Length: 151
Image 1: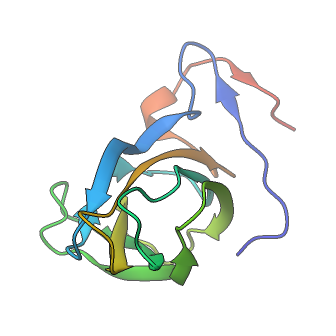
Image 2: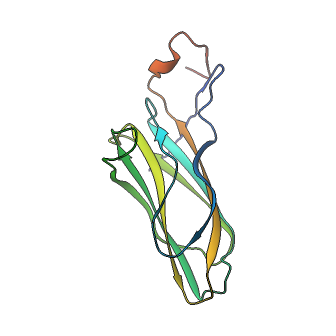
């Protein structure tokens, strides 16, 4: 975790609102991979994860939420970089925010959510997540671009 977060916005390009976990319905118990994000140059990230109340009447619903990272663009070499939650309650609707220090992470990252349900009839949750990258040391893709908010 990081104690402070500073997003830098580059002219014509923004790191905000990357669809880390596109809206989808989670059910069953299989891990669901979010989108692969190229974090080149970013030193930290903020994940905002939103979930609807569980449908189907389960007596318990929880999510394990992890960040995987690797050097392969398809994350064929993915390993767990950070465990954000091992049992996030998912019975009620909610919003969770996480500040993530990316030092030591591979170039590519993704959010992975594994749901767990007890009882109910076809229990499920609608979930979505956005990731904002920040604390850029430098961004080689943007050489010559105007940098707003730089020191």
